[in-house]
Figure 1: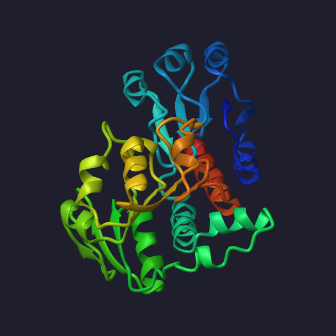
Figure 2: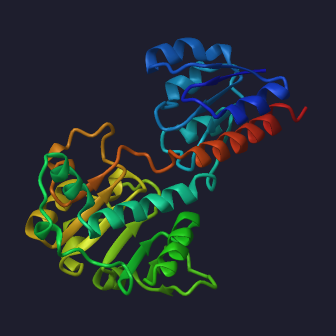
Length: 299
């Protein structure tokens, strides 16, 4: 058995594959070249950089498994894989804690003007008065949209900081955590901070209409998928002051070219690094390697 590791895997994951006799190549290919080489492999492992399209799947005449090191599967044509009887694997929980912690990195950055203060200090300035109106997270209400594994970890961290937590999910929320389940509309109107933890949407979940319902000065954090938030509406909200700040790890197009958004003085942004911690990469590598082994070596 031989698989193509298109976007990398941790050394621990490589060892698991090797110990079970699975050969592999670690090489990223752009789409035209990927289509050419994929017939040589029994499986392909990707993260977010490589798109496994219908063309790739149909060219992969020997494919038995498509594995995604991460939660989202929107870069894989799952319909085509199912039609051809190819198993699609992922690791929905392995990087949850890393993403949840990044949410708070952005929250603290926005609440205390850290990106702006850092930039001006590097210019040799000491603008203490300009950044003297920071806010505390303690006592504030955080609204969590999507109460899956990441949303639940965000809840625990928020409670530890003394925040009040409200949450909305399309699936009824059942938890022992001190969180109040509310409607989407109530969450928009009540939360001081809103963080999104939902899969890719067919249309933005947060647009101009939703932003208009929010508390003036609300902070929006998106470490989920870029298309969850309408970027134009977000910029308009930031410019009007309706949105006090935005923490963004994901964008409608990646790499993003929306410089009006990323250069906005009330935006804290990162280049889709939510799962990019040493610990998360180790967990993802081990889990996805074990799943590949269980699939390809079951006979």
